[in-house]
Image (cartoon, one colour):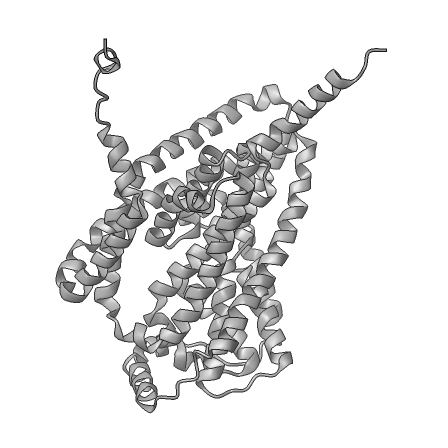
Length: 453
């Protein structure tokens, strides 16, 4: 009797096939290309379908805060009850220093080498001036003063400290103040860790149930990602067109290359830590990249980062759930790239030479300012570049319209760089499933090898 007669034909799994097609990099690139063509040739249709994508983004963001609250409190409680977990916090601080330094170094070096603000073509400079003048209302409405920052530094520092602590945690949850919510979760988790386990067990189980329900929801929502990507790209292309992208091509090249370097480096770290091939790692991370491109939000991508590292790459779940939200607030790779390259672009555009001390000042100010951008929108992050430019007396207001015009593309680069950096840093710090079981295996082998006395 033939084996095929016994086993029978294997039924076709249409869900598995659909999942592979929707998560394929080819599908993502095809949707991006189709969105660009739709925005260029059918702008009315692109604007008409844009509410569908906004509705989808609202569904994604709906899960973020419950996911964040449940995972952080649950992880902090578990780590407090395990004294060995404190060693991870020092590694997070080291990661912040390294990532900030590399972000400034990479974007600054590319800006100095490629010189995106040095526009030699007179016609291109005329078109830039015409575009800035045509966007004068935007520049005027969002202008920022150029006073020296010495008198305002203290106020800014006090304002940042006050914004970190919520006076009403429920108001912070309702308004989506991520940093305030994160601080509350950290403190609440520390307090829960000091409560005896029998008393905190019921709340811990409830938080675990909320976390798992949010994971199920994110797995449902991922089916619509390619279509949302198409709609968002089409709407953005129809709104801005291609002229601003061409005028700011040099600057976008610097941001794109900086982002590519961090993404490629992040994939290499994840591949080494998970002991997978580089191409397999890229395919595994592809849904995360789609989420980052579609939402352009680091916070909205956190559930996918946690799911990727814990479920698919088998890193320690408790450590991942703690480190991912914490590092998302501290590892601000994207804003660091923006502030460094944007300030150098403006200096080159207006022929303002910068010495070594000026470059050091730009790097330090950009790294420190990037740490304050957690939970901010892209335009608010962009507006803070005026602080760095103010130290060098650069005309930020005049160039602001140029950055607004390419905000969608730059925000995508920032999100990709930040999300991949958080994933790579977490993979670097968190123990994998293999490393977690290795000490037990080593001890057992040692006991077996030890001679009986």
